[in-house]
Image (cartoon, rainbow, N blue to C red):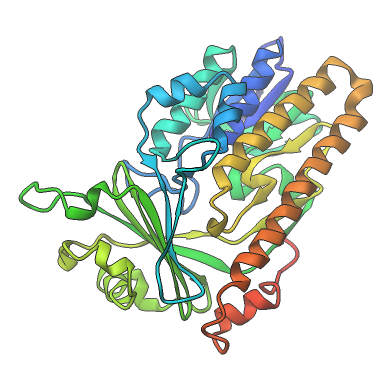
Length: 389
């Protein structure tokens, strides 16, 4: 396998990762007048997809509206017609179901995203602004160059770039070589997407439900929500507490039938048609440092959240925009590098502090199973694990 150098006129920056954080970072950089390459990995990350029609990470809260407007993306996003989210129902802290509506939210309603279409929309906006797409997988950064594997030729390529933004998600290809990742706990998600129509082509009665349902359970919690691909059902627990049977359709279905409220959303589904569950890491994760001269991490590569927060995509958009602006400032004036890095780091610290406080408060509201290892761990901080994750 040979390593070759791309033609002259190297990019000012390379953004590794074509998800929301990477696409927005590339968009901001391109609009600032810098030549930027946007690497799109041809294969999904581990645990990211459930078949060709679905990508996990499906909720965008109402507060995303002003950010999308500032980025000049709101009109195009709204035109895409992603299904509306009107709020949540939750059985959390008690067996009763309580509702929270977006009716009085100053930003309006949220959205249940078609993630594949949403990500493609953001990448398209970045390319329209001047970012240059490249189908390649980032491997490592060394001596001021990013080593990638180009998919078209299957060869290794060294990309010279003054700056690299790592938006490779939880894989954190670049950042993990320069910083330490601290894992919050051992949370994993087992999930499946149930079709909205039965064998006769009839819609299930719950197909029009516009709210997400969250239900706490003795050894974790569940949620279900409507997405364009059908009904997503997910169970969250620690990896060492997960029942082996949950890896099978029968075991997954049997477990969800033990819930009180969620099972009613699936009452008209055929148990024999339960999809094979998929698994994905869901623990909180923080990279420190997340930025240094020549590189910066954004999205899940910098900070990843427990899905209970419902803030993952919003944070990816914010960190992508902030990282793009910070790198643009550094490219325009090398003397601004120290300040730009400090500002970006401080921003991430504010995000992390708010997340920690909200996470502790939310899990602290559930006191029904004091002897459960899952809930005991949340009362003691979730047993964080330092080092590589």
